[in-house]
Structures are given as C-alpha cells and as structure tokens.
Picture 1 (cartoon, rainbow, N blue to C red):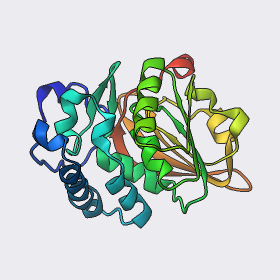
Picture 2 (spheres, rainbow, N blue to C red):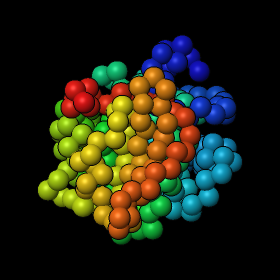
Picture 3 (spheres, rainbow, N blue to C red):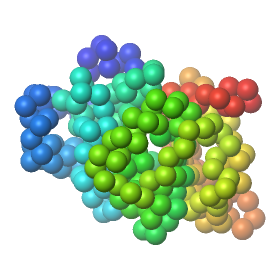
Picture 4 (cartoon, helix red, strand yellow):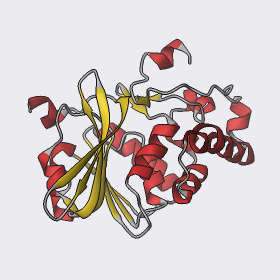
Length: 242
C-alpha cells in the first residue's frame, strides 16, 4: 500500500491483505475491464474470506466502486485497502463493506439506516439488496459528492440527509437494520431505539482499539456479538461529547 494511503487507512479489518496491482488510467475508462476487476475483487478478497451470501456477492460485483473515489485513486479502487475520499475520511476496504453488509442478514425488502454516508459506496451496496436505504452524513461536502455519484449511476432508493448520525433518523424509524461506518466510544442509544424487533445494528465501537459489534433486538432487549477487531475513523458530533 502506498504511504499516502497508509496514512489515511483507518477503516479496515485486521486481516492479511491481498495485493493486486492498480490499473492504468485507460483501464479505468473501460467498463468491461472494471467489471472484470470487480469480479476478481469478489473472488480474491471476499468469497475467499468466507463471505458466501449470494446477495452480498452480487451487490459487490455490481456497484462501480471506482466511481465513488476521487479520480486520483480510481486505479486503486478494487484493491484490498481503504482509500482517502477527502475531509480526512476514507472509503472502507471492500472486504469490510461486504462483511458489514452480510452481518445485517438482509433478504430483500428491508429498510436500512446507514450512519456515515462518506463516499456513498456502502449505501449503494446496501441499496442493491434492501428496499430503501436512509443514509446520514455529518459533512455536507461528502453528502453532496455522494449524491452526485449515486445519481450518476441511477440508484433511486437511497435517501440522503446531512446531520449528526448519533441521533439516527427518527422520523423514518424503525429500521430493519442499521449500519455505522464510524466508531463511537459507546453505542448510541438512539440507534438501538430505532431498531425493529429482529433488526440488527452493525457498528465499530472503541477509541484506538475497536471491535466490530452486532446488536440484535429481541422482544426483551438486545443480544450482542463481537465479530472482529477493526480500525475506523472516529464518529464526530455528539459522539465526542458522550
């Protein structure tokens, strides 16, 4: 991984990386070549690590990840590491996007909330499985950029809002699943409150040392599962005051 990427690579799983050489600028403009790279990414980085949910694999193979990153790093869009997207934020490693999506256990028809739109890529992946995706981003420039990327590929079931994700999206709750792409030091209670019974919250929690957690709402409370250690950018806004 180039040093410039290592410096901003904060959203990744602590597993061995699969290195594949970045593509040329000419290849980035070739839809067939980009589709081939996505299929290669799915096989070498995702399926090989144990993710077998057909819906998730298909979504990862379909969404043009390279259109969600700055032109300067599009040649690296299908590599096995995060990439900078501006404003000191990153687009997560493809494996992490697939893992977090699979942990929601979507079957189609769900309404999902994402906290931390970032580039818009995770929301786009979710939208290929869920019926409706609601995504909140605290940084307006990132939300605007994500909207341009999403509109550019014609995905119409993604609703974006600028705001503090700690509070969730109360007027559209409850949700079948909630996915958080930045790490608070404790789980926001409003997000737990906005889950349906049977719904899942997938969230990285911690400061420097973080764990990817899954909370499943039951009729009597919540079940918690620890998945893997991860590194994400910290959640800002209200999360810094808790």
